[in-house]
Image 1 (tube, rainbow, N blue to C red):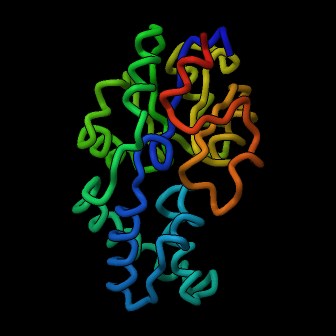
Image 2 (image 1 turned 135 degrees about the vertical axis):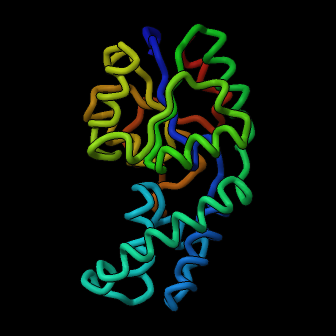
Length: 222
């Protein structure tokens, strides 16, 4: 990883602990629909593959089959978007070491891009609310490309936007979505040991290094 020319960083579970935001917006949505609520532990297993997947998983968790969840999906999506917009960032916090790590990467002259499965408008608003937007030249969300992580397409498209080869572009994330996408795209990947990985040990996901804090990432590139 000593020839890295740019860094792609995930958002939820990597830079910001947003579980509280998901909890508030998702349970408000389920309440609107008269559906059973979900716990934070449930959400932690469901989150990471975009809002549509999260909503569908929560509806199925409450006892609906695929057809029943699909019937409510449009209404649930609209309600969830409204609830999330109203509370975006209110119940979340930046993880310790994040700004130190981002600044350390910037000090090395590396361009940074945020790539998340969160809808782009919510991602931009959250980064701004937490004072992290100043570190990123580019931000891409789950609706920026035709497919989302763990598909490699978002990473490949981000590398194109950066003008760097995948092999020279580091992915930093918290879950197998980031790991699998990076491997398929040909990007090296560093995973944080906190965050959300569907209830599975993060060490079982493909990785080049594991770190307990984003502050440790710049030293890996020395």
